[in-house]
Amino acid sequence: MKRVVIFASGSGSNAENLIKFFYNSDIASVIQVLTNNPHAKVLDRCKKLNVSALSFNRTAFSKSDDVLNLLKASQPDLIVLAGFLWKFPEFILKEFENKVINIHPALLPKYGGKGMYGMNVHQAVVENNETETGITIHYVNENYDEGAIIFQAKCEVLASDSADDVAGKIHSLEMEHFPSVVNELLLN
Image (cartoon, rainbow, N blue to C red):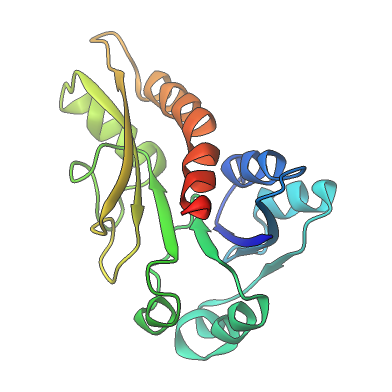
């Protein structure tokens, strides 16, 4: 049975979707969720879903081996960033080479980089009169949103769409595609 650890910073809708997808799976299970936000709604979701969840601070994550040692003890086959906002430290990436992936709410390389997350991305898409946007699932490297692309899905952006409209379309794409892409990676 493959082991998945999720990192999230906010509400955790993608984390919950993944947990539920693998709940009765013969392939994998989500064994833990880690968050940098002690008030993140993902912690409440995990409690309801009976999945171990912990919060950590920046020191534990990037200035000590605390999170690294926790991951080593968990022995994940895949680490999934699902709305996780901090840059992943190189020393953790080296330990889990090609085992850390992220979902981004745009068609990379467009609208990636520091500060480009959530509504910031959707607002930029609308302000730049884009006719399409989508999601990108990619490997994580030492730079924001620059790792090798694994999967992209597109949707149309109408001239009348607001950033909230775009957010709804992106959320639908995430819910539809993220679990199956993670599942596919675990099978290979």
